[in-house]
Image 1 (spheres, helix red, strand yellow):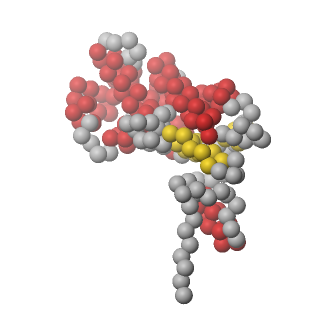
Image 2: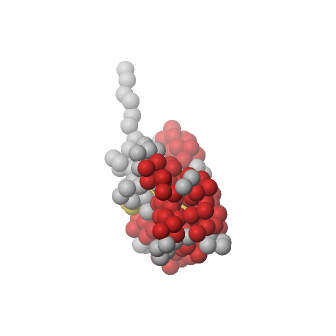
Image 3: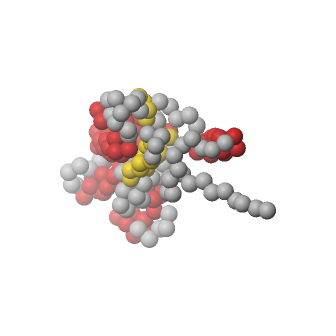
Length: 201
């Protein structure tokens, strides 16, 4: 499962144990997540402002429309405690320019590669594994989903792409229902899935 929003994490299980990849936050990881895409889009805007290679004039115009003159962007962005969310707020703008801007399309392609790398790191090598993507990031639609499907085929040709069965609330309800009927069939793990019980008189 690839969970993408402001950040990004991949989680896999062979029903005997759990594996995770990324989910390290916007400074050290979350590669391909919303903050990562937004930061890459703003970097391309600043490159265009400077006249450096890899810049995007459409993303520069968009950044100035959203944030004002980009010369003030570092001073406005760096001190903010909600910096990951602010960066992620620019990701849909990158997706919105991907059809006409090869730089924006390249950012989404790179994000898809990072996601596929994380999925490959946690996917069981045997059997018939399934890969699902969930989270608000994937509401960006085809500009992200098409390259993601292509990258998953390259990295995980033995895995089948399936839609997520539900959102996190659905998953929590399903786990609670399974626990109410007996022991959980998924493997336990202190950091991934830990069930505590209260004992009373």
